[in-house]
Amino acid sequence: MDRVSLFGGIGLISVSATLFTMERFITAFLYASKSVPVKLNGSGSYPSEPAMPGLFDNILVGWLFILGLVFILFSLRGYLYKDDKDRKRR
Image (cartoon, rainbow, N blue to C red; front, side):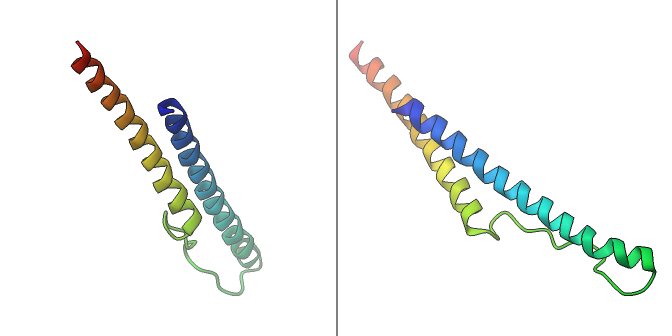
């Protein structure tokens, strides 16, 4: 069970990181799609920098990240508790 929690936690953190990276990529793409025509035509205005999302702006990314950390901590606690049980048996 500890191994399942460890790999589950790593998987959840990976999914969270992938979603966060995709959000940042989409934000940069939308910024470029708004600013390039203005730069080519020389008229109009656009923001100087894109408004990049933060880690906890999307509730799903933050929730998956925290849940992954909890799973990893549970798996580590299981490994440590298992070691304590083995020491007490000796």
